[in-house]
Image (cartoon, rainbow, N blue to C red; front, side):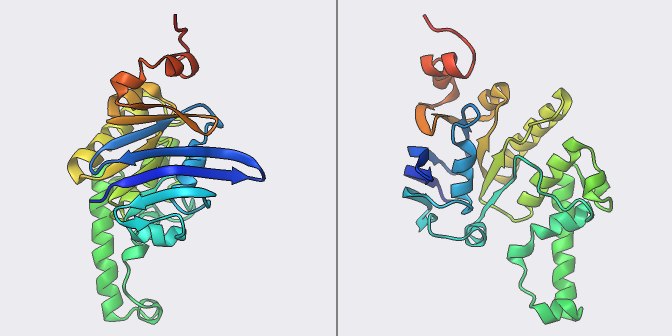
Length: 255
């Protein structure tokens, strides 16, 4: 399982510097959190890592592969999957079909074989649907597979989006505010699921989240951004004592 290494990453939009030389490493099998207030550059960072934005300079490597010149589908093909801050499900499709979209990169059947329902295509679809059911069981949405995704409560839809990302069989899972908008019970359940993903599947997790309690419990390492720059980095016990973090992000005054 490769490490994700970000070095001197800079992103500019029309003269505005959104990221200014940031860097961090997500070690294999760990949870790494990127935190900061609105406008700090967290979503920009995620969008560069997943190929939606282009960097002005710097490097993003996943193992021995440079990502900054790759398209989103090429990055996904290397084993990087993500969720979105704003849900990106197909509301009219069933939960099962939404999860099947996550299997796309592993589909080998050609257009005609699939369209004509040839034996090879049917066999492959059955294999993918069985794997979808396994992942649905793991994430707690198996009983909702036949329902339209849009009919689920908000917390359920967040689980479905995470399950769809897992259906891509990633080595690195990028979670963009996975508990945003959830109630206390849903937040606890999602935190337990993220722990299970890391412990049970061995997947590395890169996490952006405003819930500091959840971040401090889950993360092995934290990178703190402010106006596109790194102001603190390290394990939770060090970051939560950093004067800049206490002052700017935890709402505490420092002596």
